[in-house]
Image (cartoon, rainbow, N blue to C red; front, side, top):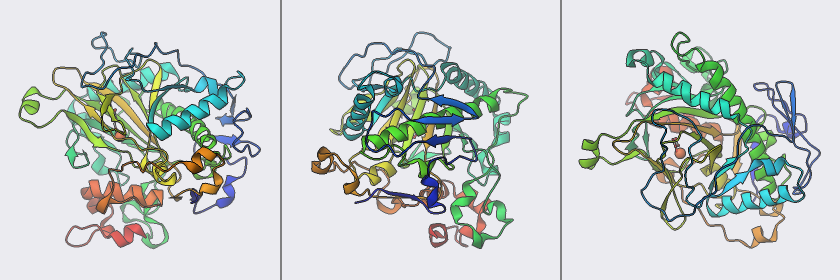
Length: 454
Ligand SMILES: O=C(O)CCC(=O)C(=O)O
Ligand SMILES: [Fe+2]
């Protein structure tokens, strides 16, 4: 079995010194392989050298372990949105990225081992000292709230149906997850780029794979209403990217691979996706009428890594391998990390794509969250990993747990990341395909899957 994670276009880009055209990221090293003690992880960001150091992030309160239950952690600062709520952590691990970068002997090895353990047994954990500035996190949540407080008519000016890249504002009810309509409004973002491929039918369809149409510009809230939204969100995505790449390097080490194993598939131009979301409290009548309490129903994420900045309201829950739902309450200074199905696929289910959901209970206030999905270049291909590349005996001896996927059946994952992503957007938003990609739809309004799958 080989984790055959490769880019279709430029395999030589795995060499040291690959530079992201988009973000100016650069990861460099000399072939550290499974040797987690080497401290040569170097990131160049916007010409700045951030070598083995992280900034921001305060400590977390002591964790209390408790059994799962419907109780949701909340904070007493009514009305103020911050990321610093003190919640109990349901026994979910808090990994300290500061230890990974620090000088203490053995700390990096312990971090990596713990990471492997959490990925294998839970698939979801908190990370503190992640390097995404605390002030920026708070500002991101505050500007999100400013946006959602705007009149509907203003929000609709950036309606996602205007975007061939499926980006922009989606009102409540537009998205559904595993067949259940989500009870949240959100803005979809991706890397800020010029449109590639043939979005809107003004290029040559034949020369580009269909996933190139996912590249393009974002729709931004009007600066007159939320002046700092764009700069804040751009900086936030940048810092989340840097953190994600560090985590991918740590994940490579945790699998006994060279630390830069994933660099070529991600570094060149990771196709991340960010949602800025508001979950209003569910109307009590709906809940009483049996409509349910879900902001987002149970699902696993399709990509590689999902990172989450959540405010202090709570409501996120994860399902353990034993089938119990446990709270993933806000924990001060942390981001929640969960693994997606492509990583699960690549590791034969050794690493778990955890099923999770969001509860929106009546009476509580709106919850704001920023999920960030870190994914490889659009042309990256994920295939199951070569077991021989894994050095650890424990790994070889372990039977894969075969984590559950919510994307089985007709909606199977495609190994090429971009195709998979385009297909799932197209399935969820046929009206965008009809409007912007009419060549991908037949006269009956069905997707032309052969064309999408290439
Ligand atoms: O908003 C959250 O807490 C999680 C959202 C989520 O799971 C998703 O968008 O996939
Ligand atoms: Fe999710």
